[in-house]
Amino acid sequence: MEDWRVAEDVAARLVTEAGRHVRGRVGRPGQIGHKSTPNDLVTEVDREVEVLLTEELQRRFPEHAVVGEEFGGDPKHGLVWYIDPIDGTTNFVHGLRGFTISVGLTQAGVPVAGAVYDPLGDELYSAAQGAGVRRNGVAARVSGSSDLSTGLLATGVPSLDPGRTEALNLIPEVAQVCPNIRNLGSAALHLAYVACGILTGYWQETLRPWDAAAGVLLVREAGGMVTDFDGTPWTAAVGGLVASNGHVHSELLHTLRGGRH
Ligand code: IPD
Ligand code: CA
Ligand code: CA
Image 1 (cartoon, helix red, strand yellow):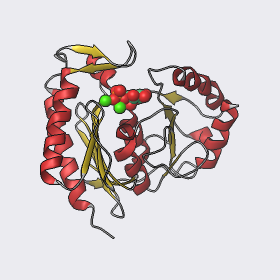
Image 2 (cartoon, rainbow, N blue to C red):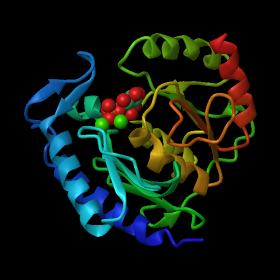
Image 3 (tube, rainbow, N blue to C red):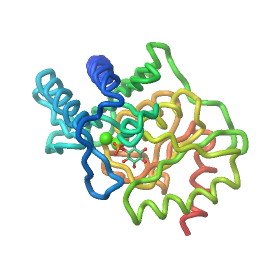
Image 4 (tube, protein in one colour):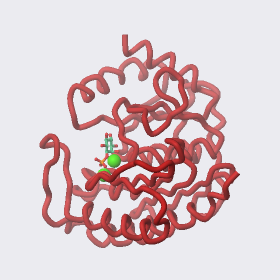
């Protein structure tokens, strides 16, 4: 097995440096543009950070492919880095904490190393396949909740329809079986919180690999599970995901199925 710790360390350093830059731009996001819909925001800072991260990863790992949310890239190699320069741009634009910088390395679509940094919480999450997960350098673990009635769940609502309407329609079904549901505004942060036992589970219908690659590894290395809505293990080819501490996974999949039919 490869030692993915080197890649983890590079990712951890880069997201922390990028996050400090983003933190300094809260309240000064520069020009704000719209992508696919008026709700899908992009700022100067998203682009600046993606350029910096891409250059550094290409310099450090010239044999790897790099794909970012804002400028794309060709995932032609077996080893592909996925960059989300700001996951939770809407939070960032409004000065709301909960946005993150996320960088994950996949091998044949399976996450093997990565890091997520929350600049306003100053929290760094990182993992390497087979080597566990660290929150600010300390080993982390998923929660021990064994059923949804005692756990806390989160979901995300995409800015695009029809995925947006479907996502909203799932919430009442799940709300019947758990105390409450959160939407913090960053897929990567939700996954980091599942990995650390703060959230019991998280699901979202429509995601891209840069939203999830690093966070999926965090959950798995902390003892949890991440699959698609049918229970197949998540890979970069999967659109939506269901993440949990593992103990509640079947119950969560079952509940979500009820809301999708
Ligand atoms: C978004 C966030 C949000 C999720 C959206 C994503 P972005 O990423 O992860 O939590 O609900 O689907 O697009 O656009 O801020 O990088
Ligand atoms: Ca994102
Ligand atoms: Ca983004």
